[in-house]
Length: 87
Image (cartoon, rainbow, N blue to C red; front, side, top):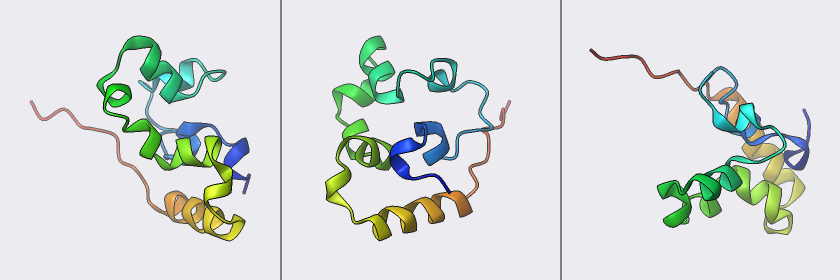
């Protein structure tokens, strides 16, 4: 498994199967920068700064290596299902 700082945000959050992920369309830019660029509410509410992907990439000293690995293992084991159209 790659370390958190070498993973893309969509890999950390298990969004690989979501085709509509804007961060996947711009892999050079993490999702929190995209949210800032487009004025997404998550950026205004500072939700991105509380996200594990943001923390792993921007504040690596907050968690020990073993804590990071445990989080990444739990994220990998928790499949995220794509939204289905309820109409």
